[in-house]
Image (tube, rainbow, N blue to C red; front, side):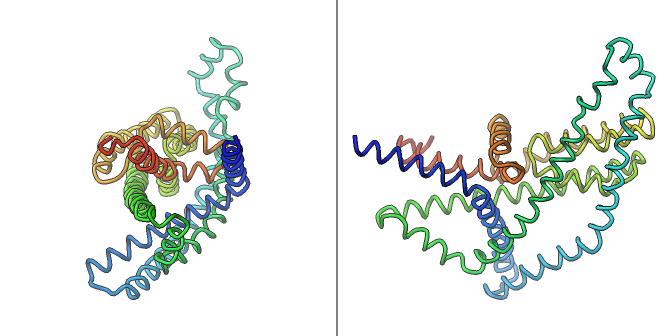
Length: 329
């Protein structure tokens, strides 16, 4: 009886600790992801260019800083200005949509449709979500420092973590950590490839149909590709609404661009990328996205997939293999 009470209190304490420190834990997890990304670049430099570890680390951080500097100097001002214009034009786009003849006919068939449009299109919620995601950027800045610290001395932190476990279990814990490292590195690679491909294809497609702000809308599509399932919808809504300023045919063309890009990504890129990276079943992805978004906010949404992929590895190795004994399950 006493043992059951102790176990129950321990579980309750762990849940409360996780709940009240969720933001800090998410920042730490984001730092681990960044450290894995930095380490992957370092390993590639060591393997392909024959650099020593310290030289590879210096080259890695110099490359990252140079890339961020170029993005901040060249792309960010242009994209930020264009995105501001996009959001300022959305109310006019909604008005243009409501003035379309086919919409007026729908209004006659379904009275009140025009009045209910602002509630049907959750523009305020979308803008609020993106604003909250922007606020999460400051948490990510902190995560960058965590990632750098972990990259500089990874063995120190790994060995320190292993000492928390009994000596006879440290070998298995090390295997789990190695599996998590490989899984998250593959996920990062696949996500990066998907984001670049979606951003470039969207910008090119919008340019081909004569859509203004193609660069910023393509960048937005690439960034929101980080959010599974919901991201493509969030990226398409402002572009389609903005296109209504140029007429319904332009809106159809823009919607077609996003549909084609998502079809290419779903049927060509994803199967190819998932041959070499980790994949999460769609139903599990949606449930994780909603659950972590409700419980942990925007940062939980951004980290939903790597967290889910990590949980899948932990369940497989610690429960299915170690508890159930199904090594080939």
